[in-house]
Length: 142
Ligand code: THU
Image (cartoon, rainbow, N blue to C red; front, side):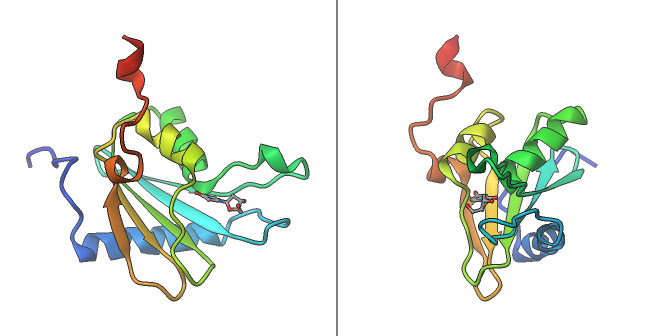
């Protein structure tokens, strides 16, 4: 089988599958302060899925978002190329990645497909390039 094209947009079926994993990760969120629970499922170049959830802290500013938790997990496992990330929440509406998470995801490429869904929302699908136009990126340090 040839390598999957990381720029390929996910078909609705793929997105729904990945969102199921992200929705499962929502259950693991540690969010006693905001009570906003978020789960992420990040797909590596070889199709491996890395999950994450938000992890809050009594010192509020130390909170780690679901997306960054998934990135850290993936990178610690040796993965640095990503195809897509699904983000799910227990809120009715889909939540898009915060600015900090957009920047952290951009470190590994702007051609990432971002898929998001809330409990009572449709599926939102965009690219990271759309979410972070004119990004500061590793190329700017060369
Ligand atoms: N949160 C995420 O996990 N991802 C985002 O992109 C937005 C916000 C979490 C952080 C915090 O625990 C809660 O949502 C409320 O901000």
